[in-house]
Image (tube, rainbow, N blue to C red; front, top):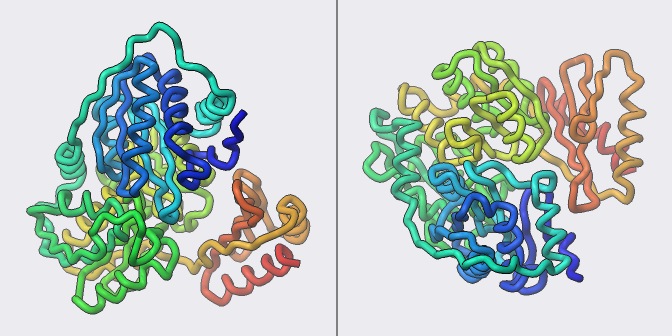
Length: 451
């Protein structure tokens, strides 16, 4: 019996190619997924630029075809392009990517029809169980048919319907695709618009020769920051490997916090749909719910992770949602995350006025934050309990355990401490009125965590 516990994650499937994932395993995953979505009749499959992706996508398709499910192959795609295909065609989908992970990894992001998430609690655990047990193919089913379809033009047209950049003032924008799928989608999305794109690392290369395709790590945006300053650009965009996340830098080359982007886009969406609900995870800045409420919206706090956010968006009929990790979710994009659409909103807001991006986004950045700090610990539960004991008895302190431990202090500062699902780590995020207050609170918590 196979053991795939190291491959099946909370939200997706991911592992080292040849060791944890190979064509045989992926073929069985495709068959198991097809059995779960057989009534849909077909599955749409896309893949990124990694060398292993075409073979693995083909193996997955073989497994689905054997179960009598038709397959629509869309070839090279960003993850949000796969979500577009799933939504537009109303079909379940599979995206082959390991996002920002190194070249030796690959993985699968699964969704039901309409880009609805598939996670541990919504089918992924059942698929794992079937594949580990070696469940045989269903007997008596006629094999499905294979179709190839290009979805890029439709994806571009749909995004342009949602955000019209045609009337923007001319903007110069540096885009770092990180040798990932942004190199495939960005030229098509901005073609013919008053946006001068200064490209960086647009060559599709799954070995990531220039830097990791993870813009949340500060070292990976150094190049785009320097280029923005060098060419006098109005903004810079950095995409991750599968281009579903987008990180923004302003005209000074300074990072714009994802919380500020969340607040900016929320205000734009609320202008179209007054009173709507806006999702924010519990690590985003408290400026986000404040600004949402000030603009007549209903802020809804949720756990970290796309499956939780998408489920909460459905429950609350939210119009938009944002995470600290630069994932942005849109009701009008089947509640799926798309960094490209968020980037278009930012450029539209910038292009509608004459000021700089730093001036525009300053209104959405109210507090200082630490960013995520990881600590390796022997006992996550014990360290979390020690932090809760140290802070919980203080006057005016409020705690909750929606996702890890969140502690709110009387002076307005707060922190969240969460255990990693996959590593012996505790992740700390701190926010307070200024950098000194952040540093003091950060050091106090870390002293307990790392004792």
